[in-house]
Every structure is written in structure tokens, then in C-alpha cells.
Image (cartoon, rainbow, N blue to C red; front, side, top):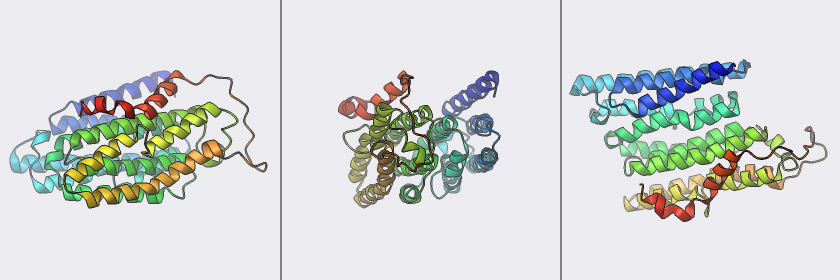
Length: 346
């Protein structure tokens, strides 16, 4: 792909995201989502591998269906209430259809099946965009419409997402699929709290995006996409592998890392809302995903490759670690002590 083409597609992604997050009218929000979808497709399919073409096709069909449902719910609401404003969504059927559309856009269970397949067929940098930037516009729409949505339905979908995200990631060997199921599990935490404390959902999304960006960029630097090659990276980049271990523990939500902060706040808020059983259930289900984070961390740092490995033993890399990864790793693991400062923004 030529640099000019990359520039056009990246600019379109930024434009589509900006249009959606700054719009008050349903049609402009829909237009921004469509620009986003069309801009990311060439980035998914740029390798011309059959799996990449399949991923791009699956992504297009899913996103087109979700966009059609979103437009349908907006038209239905306008038909009954005469309102095209995003925050004035009041018709119950329109709210239900919109919940389905946004769940499909985000990859929230039970509309999550496309996400691991698309991520597996994409390059690591595109997979990073799909996990973070591409989820920002639908997350913004979820934030703006949260007072109108059904909290019980969102709670059930959230618990299902956390369960399936943890359960289906257990036996994966491809790192991109593991991170896809991790994303589905994290979306459950965001969805369960959006009706009660929407700003907490956004905080969770920002911190999740920060930590996931660190993991993807680290994997892209060490050129690793499956567990068997991750085992050989310790001899190549020991410092980077150690940082990957800490970032994965932060993504798992363990104290004293940054990833613990949103989970702690969400559990606290759910308890205040007399939803202690839901908080207990989602906390226990997140232990499933903790298993595969520990598995990744174990493969990255503790396992030395056996002598019979099919992969060549890696030598130390002479290139220094990119400064962006160093900064991201620091923020991904060390923001918990300044949590009072972060809480002033929520």
C-alpha cells in the first residue's frame, strides 16, 4: 500500500470518528460510522491473503447490518416522536433496536462472533485500530443514549460478554484472537455500568485503549502473533518481554496496576446501586480471562523454548525500544497512585 493511500485512509478514519462523536443528529452520526467502515476495509485487506479478504468481507457485512439497524431505530424514533436528536431517543422499540445495533458495532455478546475472526485476519496495527479507535464512535453513541437504554438488558448482555470473552479465549493459541476475546470481556464491564455512571464507562474505555495499544505495539515490535513464537522472544528482547508481562497483568485488572482502577470503581458503583450480585458475578467471570492473560505472560517471560522448537532461537535485538512503547508501558502500569486525580475528571 502506497503512503498516499495510507494517508487518505487514516485521514478518513479520523474524519469519520470526529463526525460521529461531535454530531447531535442521527444522520450525521450514521454518515461518520459509514466513513469509518469504508476507510478501515482496505487496511484489513491490504495483505491480499485469503484470510484478510475474508476478514474484510465479514467486517463489512456486520457493520453494514449494524448501520442499517441504527438508521432504522433513528427513523422509527423520528416517526413516533418527531425527534432526530441523538439524546431524545424515547421510543422503547427504537431503544431496543439501537441497543442491538451498537452491540453489533462494538462486538458485545451475543453479537460478538465476527470480532475474533476479523482480528485474526488483520495485521497487528489494523487489529489495534479495530480494538480501540473503531470502537470509540459507537461507544460515544452508547454514552449519549445511555439514559434511554434498558439497564436490565445491558446487564444481561454485559455478564454474557464477560462469560463468553473469558470462556472462549481459554484454548486459543493465536494472540490476536486472545486479545479479541479480552476486548469482548472488557466490553462487558463497560456495558454493565453505562446506565448508572456513563462517565465511568468512558474512563474504562480510555484506560482499556491505552493498555491494549501498549500490548499490540509491543507485539508488533517483536513481530509475534502466536504463543509458540512468543516463547522465543525472551532471548531477543528481555526488557520488552518484562514490560509485556506487567502490561498484561494490568490488562487483567490486577492491583497495583492501572487496569485495576476501572474495575474497582465499577464494582464500587454497582454496590452503591444495590447490584452486589451482578458485581460478584462479573468479578468471578473475569477470573476466566485472568487465566489466559497469565498464560500469555507465562509464555512471554517464564517459558524458555525447548530444544526441539521449530523456530530459530532469536538473538538480542540491537534496535532500542521505541519511546512511544516506553511511555505507554509506564502509563499502562503506574497510574493507580494518581487515581484521586483521575477521579476528579469522572
